[in-house]
Image (cartoon, rainbow, N blue to C red; front, side, top):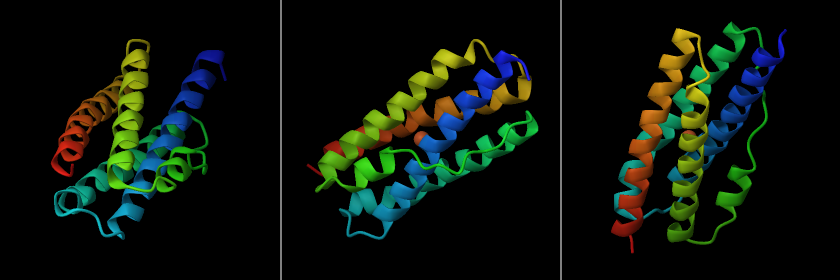
Length: 140
Ligand SMILES: [Fe+2]
């Protein structure tokens, strides 16, 4: 395995950890008594994160790697926060961080299927960052 592909698989596994943390956190928040605007938005946001766990696992396997079973520290960090504004603030920052990392990486991705998948993931993260920002304003 070349250094390039090993580096790419490390990156995809890092993204997988992050998406798993996001999916678990949003599913956990669905069980809490969230403000109505947020409660309505949570299922779609959770579904996106879960969808990217599947997508990343599939791409890692296709490229000869092993999908990590790790959950990113984001899950523990966000579920430890006491209130919705603080959780949404961290959600915005976490999703924006993932979007930035994807944008930085995309130029170097040559595999067309992976590039298409990561581009779509990047676009969805930008939409969801805006959505989380809108929700943060709606609940305060
Ligand atoms: Fe995410």
